[in-house]
Image 1 (cartoon, rainbow, N blue to C red):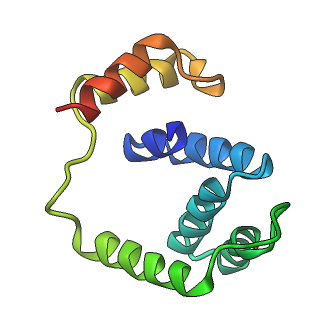
Image 2 (image 1 turned 90 degrees about the vertical axis):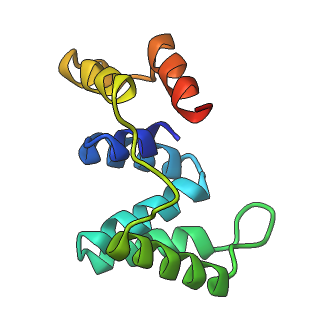
Image 3 (image 1 turned 90 degrees about the horizontal axis):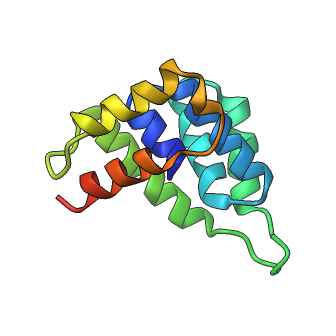
Length: 125
């Protein structure tokens, strides 16, 4: 979630770092975010690698269904092209808080309590 927040507030390189860290630890959602991120950049080889990480059988013996991923990809492509009228990007104090972290080099570590508080404020509006 922290990586997605970074991405939404204009810090795609930091988001990619956190997605890679999480995906490397086995988080399939982070791997899927990397898949979409690399697709958006036109990096098809990297996107294919992360898609494989999502669909390959894990320790439990199952991967994520390819049809589901195709549907999610179609929705993501539509939203990227047309926008989403049902949501607004983070603004105001939340974005300022992420920028504060980026300016102080704190973005390389886990989020501090102030960012968590701002995220809670944003998501409960």
